[in-house]
Image (cartoon, rainbow, N blue to C red; front, side, top):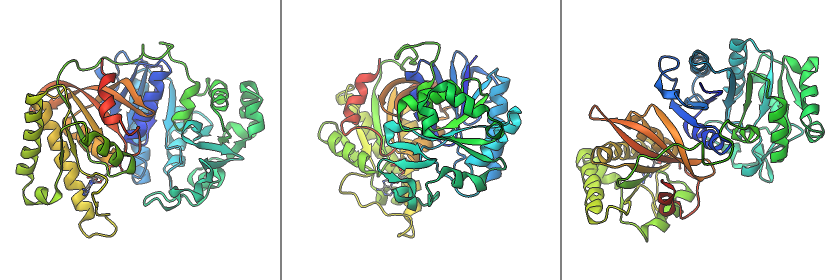
Length: 425
Ligand code: ADP
């Protein structure tokens, strides 16, 4: 029975937390959406389960309903400790969804209050005097200021949270955190903190460890993946909590991301691996034929050398990607590219692929959905927030084992596309 259950508000956020939990000694499963039937096979043998929802920018009522449904399913599976995972840049609007989901989960658990800990110093997110920094900038001076869906125009977590919650918002200052876990516990025990959402300062990993120790008895904590640094799972050190891989078989890279880091990864891999660009014009002219051509390219490469994973990519350094804002059909083309890569994924798994590295958050979502993957057992880490994950795909009605590495756009070093394969056991 999982001893820790997390509810994540987006897909790559779920894998980010799950990767951290594996390094902390939890055998970890990510479920795509609410696990069916309460317990079920999906979470069997796991020490931690992370439910990946799409609740970050969903209508608030939907986000609350999905989160509560996840909590109920996890409680039915026997879980007693919960972790609501959101982004370390606190992505939300005055309506939510962080505050309303935290309130609903607390109400469901019958718990009065909890902590709010978005700090993740390893990725430059620190909280001091309740203000959230992104590296050297306050949140509202970082690029998050102009995020298309969740523009962050304030850096004070108390002010951001107040319109989102029915609870009072309280604060534990950095001096208290520095004084250690007992001091934090005492501060959280004060009457004005007990029924509140309490923003806790943290600027270092040691701060996060102190907060994690102080909150070990709380039924619910909330934060980014950094807070999990302070947790220790039953398998202790790294490695032992990893899942097995899908075994020998060919692999491929499907890159649908247009982010700067991915374009550099594509540039590096193009010099070393067989590669083929996705041509949006060709997709528009005939999706079936274009997808068949990409799949034939990969399978021909496998025949020539099954040890080298071919790369299919939608954007390289030189590719001009139409932004949906400036181009009438930008969003349409983006979805078409996602569909094409998802169809490539199912065709390649049907053709025997055992390993797929997928670049792009939306692209990853499309691929996982197309493959019918319900649960991912987190395996070898590749980079902070990215790991191979073992799953069972359902293609043409048949179950097939496959390893997926799902990488959101800006994650990973330049050589990730070529080095990732060495991590498979
Ligand atoms: P990231 O994690 O880098 O944001 P996503 O997969 O979430 O990556 O988003 C990238 C989007 O850009 C996807 O919808 C993808 O289909 C689209 N895209 C990538 N390359 C192109 C291209 N050449 N033309 C149009 N859209 C593209």
